[in-house]
Length: 275
Image (cartoon, rainbow, N blue to C red):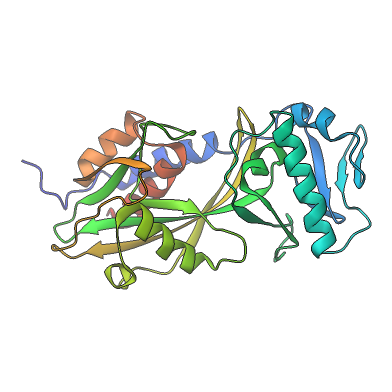
């Protein structure tokens, strides 16, 4: 019987990771318009959303680009314009779901801080940058805790995922987002993950999805959970949590049982640990 601490060959993991990263690197849909907000590059406007926004004051659409609030600076007026845009897209049926949750609008420039906030449900139609935090939770005997997404999830229902994974909300530090998601998705308190490694960026997801364009910064960390700590979902978005050996996780990754983002996170973690 294979021991939990046995890892797949590092070369195999590296090859798998390269193929996953390649799958996650795509240009926006054909016909998408580069999106500028307050004059800064921020996203890619999905073609089906263009017509719905054509008559909104403060929105400028040309054959080569889209501008929201070109003459504005970060502040209440810009946020109000983006709220109008979000509600217009909702009324036009161009949003995959409405969450009543605000996310930061991040310019696609080095070191760029938030310039506004907008409803989470329109991030993909606008191709805006999101930030996701993940936690790889290990058992003391070298197995890995993973979660299976609820069948009611709008994206990748029923697929396996990292133990903890979620988006950073507006004005929320990434570390606090990780603690919040750990509580909601795995029933873990801050003390349960206090030995975790620092969050680090490992990838940027850039891929075409049915509702638009996913542009997501992927941050991850690892933690060993003590034997008395059993993860338990609290928010109803997970149907199952289980613990598998690295060899089994690798088999599941090869079979495509995990979401693409989780596959990158887990493969990178296994690769770092393999010899």
